Length: 80
View 1 (cartoon, rainbow, N blue to C red):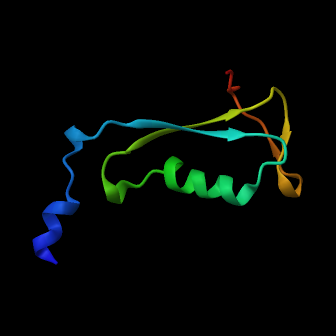
View 2 (spheres, helix red, strand yellow):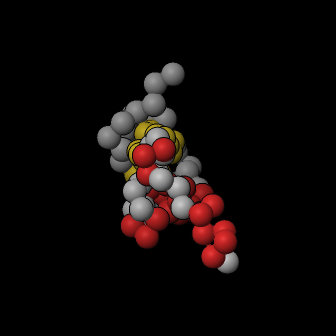
View 3 (cartoon, rainbow, N blue to C red):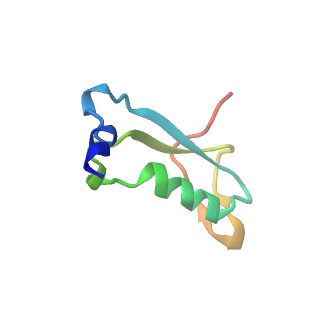
């Protein structure tokens, strides 16, 4: 296992932080949204520096309802 340790060590200077934006919309499935937040949005200090910048943007203005009646409000709206 020690012979592979070098492969798992990635110098932080070579990493560029990518931006990941999850789109929120009416009828959003909270399970998939939660997985996205878990992977890209939560800090992982055990892995060193954050690899991603994470944000949530709405498809439409105003309050959204996810499955199960959960209400969502975002501070950004996606514009194409």
